[in-house]
Structures are given as C-alpha cells and as structure tokens.
Image 1 (cartoon, protein in one colour):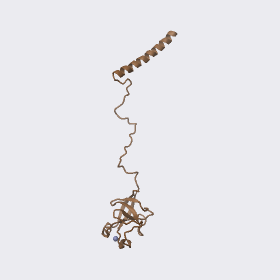
Image 2 (image 1 turned 135 degrees about the vertical axis):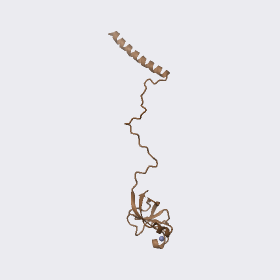
Image 3 (image 1 turned 120 degrees about the vertical axis):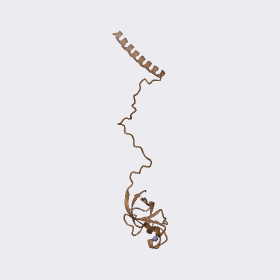
Image 4 (image 1 turned 90 degrees about the horizontal axis):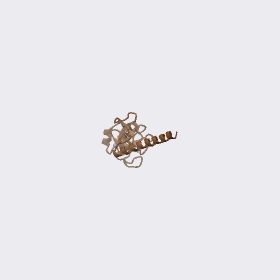
Length: 156
Ligand SMILES: [Zn+2]
C-alpha cells in the first residue's frame, strides 16, 4: 500500500517535473509551450463596432418645409426704414430672417436649403406659421428672391 502511495506521489512529481521542464525548454528555444491557435479569418460572430464617422449627420435634425419670401429695410417692405428688427438688432443680410416666433422662436438658428444659415431676429404681420422672410440689403435682391418653397432645418 505504501509503495503504491509513493508511486502515485512520485508519478505526480514526475508529471510536474516534466511540465516544468517543458516550459523551461520552451523558454530557452522561445517556443510558446501553450500556443493559442488563432485563425487569420476574423470570427463572424463578433460584431465589428460601427465606425463613427466625424462628418456623419447628427441624429437627423428635423427638416421642415417653409414658404420663404424676402424683404429689405425699406418703407415698402417694412412700413419703416430704420432697419431695426423686432428683436432690436439691426437687420443684416446673410444673418437676419423674420419668422413666426411661435413656430421659430427669436434667436433660432436655421439652415435654409439653397440660402444658408440664418438667425430669427425679426417677425412680421404677414409671417405666420411655416413662413419666413429673408432679409436682403437691397430691395431689388429681395424682389429677385421672390417667393420660394424651401427646406429648413433648425440648427439650434
Ligand atoms: Zn424693400
């Protein structure tokens, strides 16, 4: 019985010794004793994370359809000619638009397709609902713009 036990212990020790030896040899000859087998093909089950493109559109800002007209600061357009908007600032071409402040509140920055970025600084009696009035420095330019259906996106 004792001999059997000794034999078991010895074989256990031998087993450990062999493993240790294997690892030692492996270290010497620079071989991974427990190589992990990797396949060159990427596993299909792993979901590749979606790349985050920097120029990707924001979580789709709402685009609305508006009727756009144009005006200038003349008496004909405004009934006055001081160029002061309803928000108190002087109207500026490339910046100012008039809108229904219940639809687009004062200070709202919008992108108007085909026109550019504008800020709601003004309002007008005829500007109700989905209507905007785009400010131009010259009456002629305002007339030339006429009346258009535009796509408008709120930026902020
Ligand atoms: Zn005018």
